[in-house]
Image (cartoon, rainbow, N blue to C red; front, side, top):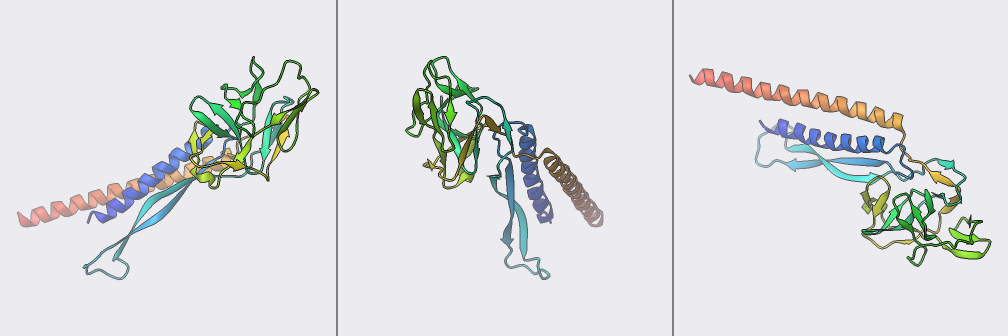
Amino acid sequence: MENTTYIALSRLDTQQRSMDVIANNIANANTDGYKAQRTLFTDYLSRQHAVDAPRGADVLAYTQDRATYLDQKDGSLTSTGNPLDMAISGAGFFSVSTAAGPRLTRSGRFGLMPDGKIADSSGNMLLDTSGNPLQLSPADTQIRISGNGTISTENGPVGQIAVVTVDDVNKLVPEGGKLYRADTTTTPATQSKVSQGAVEGSNVQPIAELSRMIQNQRDFQFVSQFVESEAQRQQNAIDKISQIES
């Protein structure tokens, strides 16, 4: 008798999770390099034993939150004119040094620190292929960045930007809207291209996300009403049984 309610509640739980993910996507629609998150739900089949039931009623299908993964489509590129702004086309992430350790990011809006090191707006330093911060000298004024991430100036080469990837991007742990923690070994991204003087925007499509949110809200309300109706049905059944026994 409670199975119907439990199945509906499992659906409500996953829809609430979906709503949280969609809301986070919308909140980061203007975050440079942000990759939209998607939810994956599947059925959890609970087989019933030793029951006399009509055909099909011996298996209960609950809804379970299977995974949350990243939408890997590239965001649109916007030209900025800043020689230290960079965008990655294809798979790959910039590697930056943070207070919590190395992190990955697609946000390529960089600038110079007072000591000449290249860093993002939070002060996280851009790393080279050896894991060291990239640094320019005061005499470096004409900055050139090639497609493979090599930085050079009128005074010669400076270093090569670490553009890396992981075996399974869905195992990356988001930290805020721009950073990811990689719990696995990173490898050089050989198929990507670095564009100088541009930044990659978020790949979130706000109108599509709003449509998903509206549909999800409608589904949530429908299931909620079903749960309330089922609760009322059970209460009515209990009241009638009580009247008969009395």
